[in-house]
Image (cartoon, rainbow over all chains, first blue to last red; front, side, top):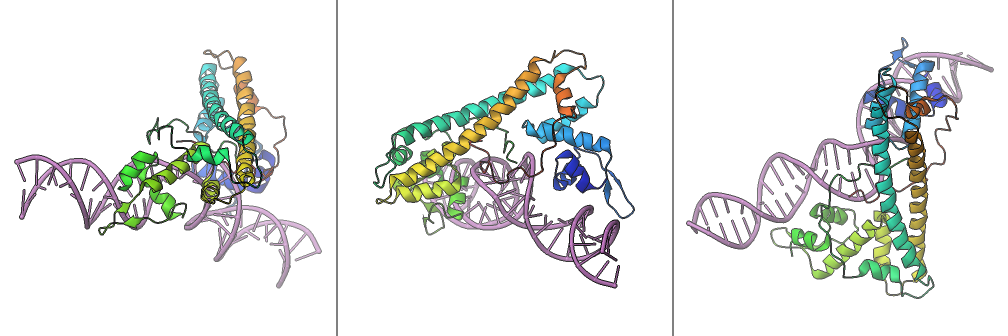
Length: 151
Length: 151
DNA sequence: GCTTGACCTTCCCATGATTGGAAGGACTAA
DNA sequence: TTAGTCCTTCCAATCATGGGAAGGTCAAGC
């Protein structure tokens, strides 16, 4: 199977398959004489595993751990669970952040007439002088969660 | 005021102030003879406006629009409201995505013993063969929201 | 006046996951 | 043989941000 077929069968783009290979998430494949990558059903299975993990928002680093646990018959389920729960924690923190933003904005928008006049509580809030500027570096590595599922 | 003081007063790092200048979000400042950037209280006020917008998850592009509306005394509040509400929509979509991930994972984790044995429903779900691979390109530009407030 | 240390300057690089595109080779069907 | 589709590698861009190097500037203390 060529890379394009493996991509279609797994839901992971050819580009990403090559990328995953380049960073070592998946091993280098067999090549044809002319250099084409060749994939087996087993490889496709692995790619699907990766795709599902990605759909759940796991980072590539976490996916690497999950894949190796998947392939380890002696794994302890607590190791898998730990990764999952840590990720849940990150997701929930992120959800809370976004909810705060959304609720602030909705509140402001509700009080904005939204007509042709310039008066606007949204702008006023953004421009307001109160509220501390907050330290430039609040807590550093807090959200290592980038574009989650921005596919 | 030097850039460092403006950074401390506004909550926007020096690095970011230079960056915002380079992309045209804020105008080029006056410089001292030796090339140091000089900021006024008014500039700091603008930087705070930007920081607040950023805290609410607006993209730099949206912030540019907000700043220009802020400075336009003839603005229509509906233009501001439109930007805010569009952003709320993006935030809520993203929240829903993350909630789905979290709830799937929590459900799986609840059914995982989390002990030393290998049996694990989380891994099994990731490895399961059912469920369509889903087209590689579902809907393109859906989440233009990158690292939201990953500061 | 000179040294020290804190600040400033520009420039380049890295992040994470992903996509786009160019240049060129390989394969397949007509 | 040719057209068209696939593959290859390599490089660049995204978005907002931080890190760091190399070098210039400034203020305080001696």
